[in-house]
Image 1 (cartoon, rainbow, N blue to C red):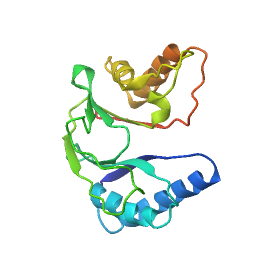
Image 2: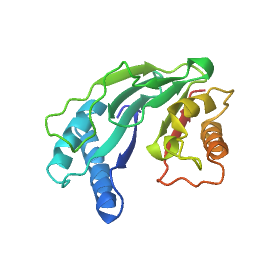
Image 3: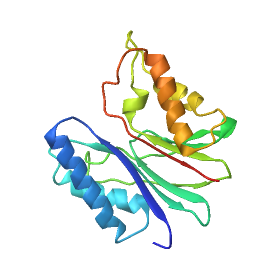
Image 4: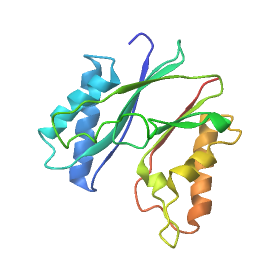
Length: 193
């Protein structure tokens, strides 16, 4: 609506057909809910009710953002998902941070409230979203790549969204050596010009 762009990333607990079907259900619910509101918080709250009524004890972590390219703002609602990484260089920060509120994953309990965080994007800022397949990529001793290493990989002089993804993957591969990731892996990156 009004040139705004919705961005969503999520991860279902579990694997297989049941998990895939639940993600498909969430994808359809998100699209439907955005017909009713442009609030990422309200979308997650409504999707949570739908998933709670049909998920058979599975849950989904999800982060939804609404980007306003004219105002250079991003409104974020997070339901137990990995935080977005936003900024550039030393100003890169997780949103939500450990000090900011986030909701539980959707599908756990029907009584659910999800706060919205508003972020002003500055020229050169990166917005990086990922699933835990990246941060939980392990080396041969089962040490995880982790959030801190991911953040460090994105603090360099990154010139593009593609560069952010390439930098994160290269750092995770260097850390893990010959170990392949054991989980699925999704990343979304944007960069303000």
